[in-house]
Image (cartoon, rainbow, N blue to C red; front, side, top):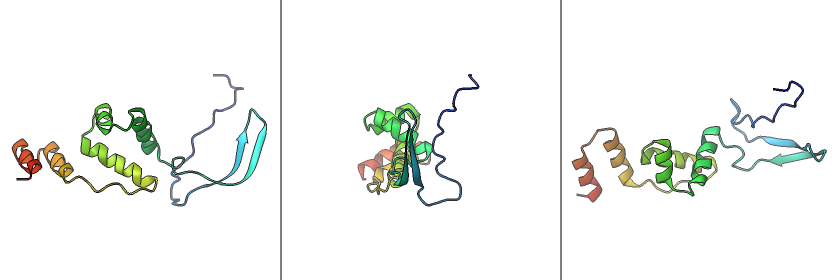
Length: 126
């Protein structure tokens, strides 16, 4: 590594420990153009995502919104992927849709708390 090369920019240190409010940006720098803009600028809801939520969003976009594909890539159960998606939605200010009541049955089956036969019975509504 060249010791004279400038350090690459760091990602925003968000969320910032112990701080709940959204940050206020006061300067924008366009280094190649030699321009600095000072003022008060807000960040959009995507700029303040946690690294985990941002990674999940990137994957979700990459697979064109297919949660089953997210499930396959991450090696997680569908209910777990759906819960992570709901967390992402809340973090950008949206309330997720009401949970599918079948998700709890699938969660119980995945944990081995009910048999496949019991899960089938519940899913069929009997």
